Image 1 (cartoon, helix red, strand yellow):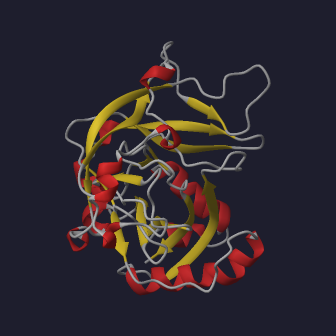
Image 2: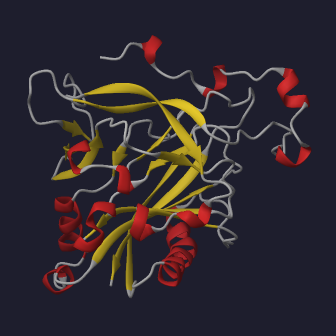
Length: 303
């Protein structure tokens, strides 16, 4: 087990010398006048550490009384994380399993009511995917998650390297949501893509890091059984590999979108069909930075 001393320092405990603040160009400050961290940073990421007894790793989505929520551990490793800002066009869903978009407006501003999010924001996301994902002919948005760093929030940023889907769970998603059409849909290309954006950008605390899928080996990925009260699902944990190349998009704004491909049935881009990702503590986060709030919508993409 990792001790508390080995974990990254929470953002609210970090500080930035006053000299650093006073010398930061005004254009690179957030609305509160705090400096936005930019450029390559070395930060600690939490990778997979196998169960001590050699058993199959699992996680209880709803913890059971007196039972550990998961039987595997964390391996914290300091890794360099490169800034995507200024080199956005170098990365695509087919080549790297992530892609970024700028200048995206939305008519939804509150993100407090799930039904309103589905009514207003979902159609925007569906159009975004159809317009920007090559080959996409049909989109089914099957859920969303809002994460907030505030105390007592239902979901906080996840500080563990993971992939939301495995090949097995991706197929199960199609059969679960579209049972009558599943056999036909599974015979053609299908993908699962997460559409991620901040709600209170520019992001300064708990930014999202992604690993270039082309630098992630199959043997780095470990299926994790997720045990629900009525069914089991599966995600992938990730072992550390020094060959992995990590990135983040500094100071991500509300008008920017990060597309994360979690699965792709097209075997010609299979190696690049899954992107490890995690929130991380940026050691440069200035004191007083507002905790990150974000939403990710998960999409089945056919074609």
